[in-house]
Amino acid sequence: MYKNVKAELARRGLSLNDLSTMTGISYSTLHNKMNGKTQLTLDEAKKIKAALEVELPIDELFEASI
View 1: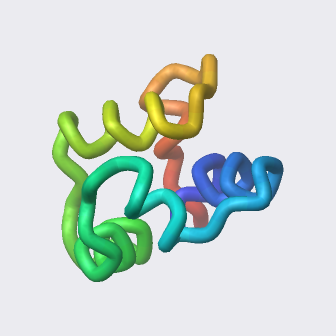
View 2: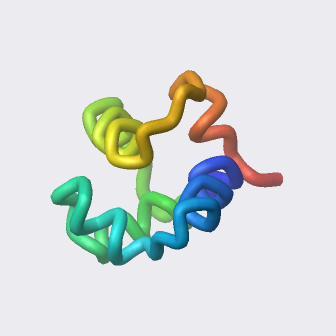
View 3: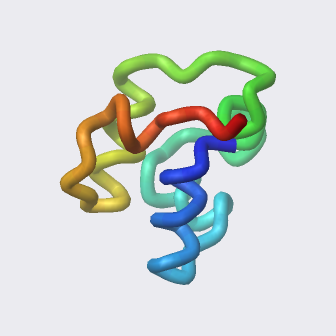
């Protein structure tokens, strides 16, 4: 998963299901993208960034875990 997205979800006490509801991205699609099974689109990344209301640039927010 993207470590900074995971951290922001934890800070806000949100689940992936909550993020799905907030972004309009289906849970299964979001789950696959967050776990690296499929790639995020720029539009999806922008929706997630807006939903989380973070100041981090998109490239930092979606920095992949090693």
